[in-house]
Length: 131
Ligand SMILES: [Fe+2]
Ligand SMILES: [Fe+2]
Image (spheres, rainbow, N blue to C red):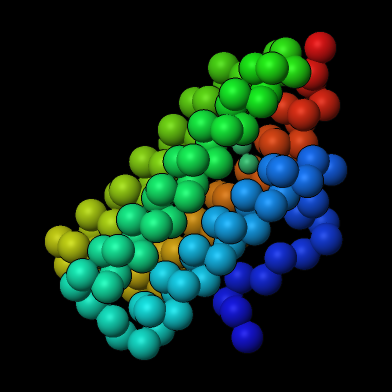
């Protein structure tokens, strides 16, 4: 069973956004599984990169969409996206430097304490703030 399971309460009401969120979950699951199997080096680097790319692409698309619909929370939302991406980069760097005690726990924290709250609160708020 995948570590990070999609739940109906994560739906934002926008199918495109939900589909992209699910892709981020898929990427996080692949990375988590590799960590669980104690994979290292290039394999882990590639999976981190996939998570970073999926997340970046989603944020870019979402920001364009929020701009199109005239969401008043766009500026705030963009800053929040930058923080989330920086946190993936920090996680990755700490792993490479050997300063992370448990990369699986770091990823769980990012998914459950950072990404999911962003989805269910900030994405929904930004959608509702359309003009
Ligand atoms: Fe999102
Ligand atoms: Fe967002």
